[in-house]
Image 1: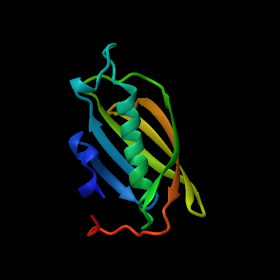
Image 2: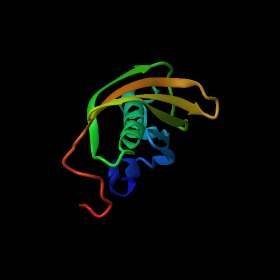
Image 3: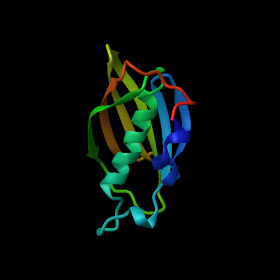
Image 4: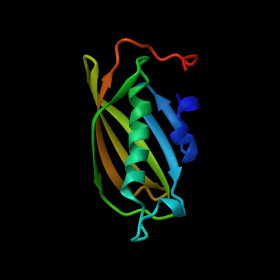
Length: 132
């Protein structure tokens, strides 16, 4: 999936762990990712969490997309911070699932955001590395 994920590649995201229903993704915040208050734009924090969510929910061999997502920003982050998003599957039912993602500052472990995503699998297609 990462080979086709130009967003993650362009933002230099790193998938550091992957297992069924789980994923850990890291990203270093750049000067271009901060807002007029000098803190990380919430969209980038959300994007990191959403990416970890996507990798976690796509570990079950079916193309899976977001059906819903929400985020709570807990603490500000700044340019130069390394953020780590840890996604964990809470439940799967039918073609749907619920995933929680915690975004932390590395190495302090301070929580920056909490994200919850709902997924929906597309039953008609199985992941295939050779697909366009």
